[in-house]
Amino acid sequence: MMNIIYLDNGATSYPKPEEVYQYLDYFYRNFGVNPGRSGYDLCLEAGDMVENTRKMLTEFFNGSDPNRLCFTYNSTDALNLTIFGILQPGDHAISTTIEHNSVLRPLYHLSLQGVEVDYVPFDRKGFVDPADIKKKIKKNTKLVIVNHASNVIGTVQPIKEIGRICKENGVLFAIDASQSAGKVPIDMKGMNIDVVCFTGHKSLLGPTGIGGLCVAEGVEIKITRAGGTGVRSAQRTHLEEYPYRLEYGTPNVMGIAGLRAGLKWIQEKGLENIHHQEMKLTEMLVNGLKEIDGVTLYCQDDLTDHISVMAFNVNGMEAQDVGIMLDVDYNIACRTGLHCAPLVHEQLGTDKIKGAVRFGIGPFNTEDHIRIAIQAVREIVEFHQKKKV
Image (tube, rainbow, N blue to C red; front, top):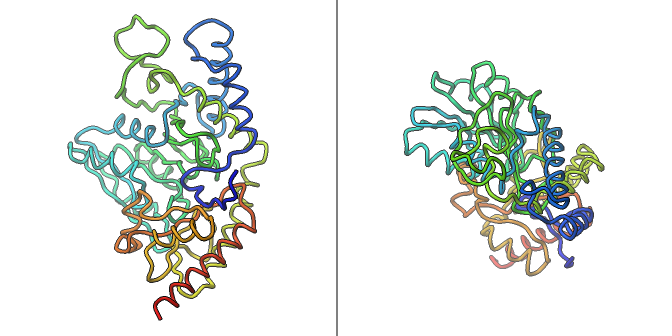
């Protein structure tokens, strides 16, 4: 690995655990065939791995049935399947201003076709009030969809309470777990979640190109795509039963293999242990940046109910320029701009200054990384202030 301080784990986790690299190499060399399409040993082994991973993920989310864990290309794919598979003209949906474009754009598309959509804002601390969601529920409300953890400010939303409200009112509840899966516990049964949409390449520590959705018992998402499933090939219509209902074509078997290895690593290390270490570093980072005159932080002092993602700006500088200096002068990787979450930046007021700088901490970051990052930002601020004089 290059001598880089990688603080862009909100975009994708890097590096991956060594076990992920090893298992990908082992699996592709020994069982890298199309699973479930034939009866020879290699195909059966690949199919067993896919079904084993399906079961592991279902248990990880405390879902109801492994067959209702459907693999997709990423969380955006899963969210599109969910949103377009549940809503139709005349329905009402509720979401929030904390959402990523993977939710905002499908909802906007449907709003042009007769689906009514309301957005609940987050408060000054970055949280959505479940009572505000309850107030928006109407007779034709079909779906509430919420970003579990913000990819900009890192707040973890009170989904257990939101799930309770949805259940009491007979409304389906889906979460975007792109940032949260692999960082904080997700309990579908205990939190009354109907659909969990997730990606494999972020905090689940797998490769890109793999994600999925876990669907609760009794929830039916209509078929919006069709194709080969490897079984009952003479049937003209796409299969109705899960997981085939939402899966089509050759699966990303390598992505699934890497996701399996990443999830296994998380389970061995302990989700709570990983989160504790990441939040310890996040607190160190926030406290260090807070002491720099000329830096604006977009988070509260209390980091309870947060993941290890935070955003800031250097006053008087565009975020992109700060990001370039961090890269060129300090070899620090980060993300700048609007982070595909325009409504978050509208509420923060950062849309007018082209966004913010985001640091995302992962399981392989160290205290030295954080110290260097804090010092780098301090020097950038000093450089900018001298330049103004």
